[in-house]
Length: 219
Ligand code: DC
Figure 1 (cartoon, rainbow, N blue to C red):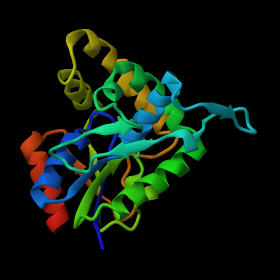
Figure 2: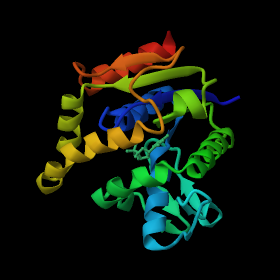
Figure 3: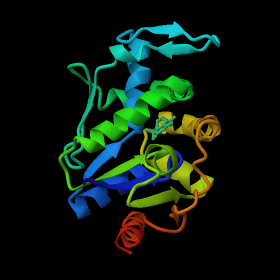
Figure 4: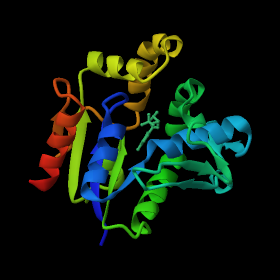
């Protein structure tokens, strides 16, 4: 059976780069679950996927039109919608601005939960590090190891800004805070659920954070 290492955390906690490195060191796959939400937001905005109104007036993407694929190789990462490589496009600020509203649709969350489980189950790998907002609680509550990776808001803002160009960085502060606020409506990603180990990386550099996460996994 494939081992699951579940890692949750807020925007800018460093969970993507840390999870990738942890996966490499363990010889496991790496699954970025936020990429699917981003790809869906892109697909809707480009009109590759249509949408309809739910009974409650919410705009729901036509999920059966969403042809999604993703690499689980931490050293050769790509994301596709149909034949289109969207690895870079889904990181554009315009996607960060719209993704939370897509992620707030209950039908989308149910679809993503099943998509994630199916990707892991059919991975043919010894294990997968699965990273996101609700992995430890909703998607894989029975994972072998469950970790919540956090950092103070101040440190998260600095880290996010350092990844981006200066023009983009000035919008990041409000973006990270408002995404945290929006995302926290659908998943509590700041408080560890029962059985979930908290790793606070506020005072740790990248290598130290990777080491702290590996220590939890090997404990
Ligand atoms: O981790 P990220 O920034 O790539 O996530 C993009 C968006 O998707 C973010 O608004 C939160 C949402 N998301 C989610 O709701 N559940 C997940 N498991 C992963 C991401």
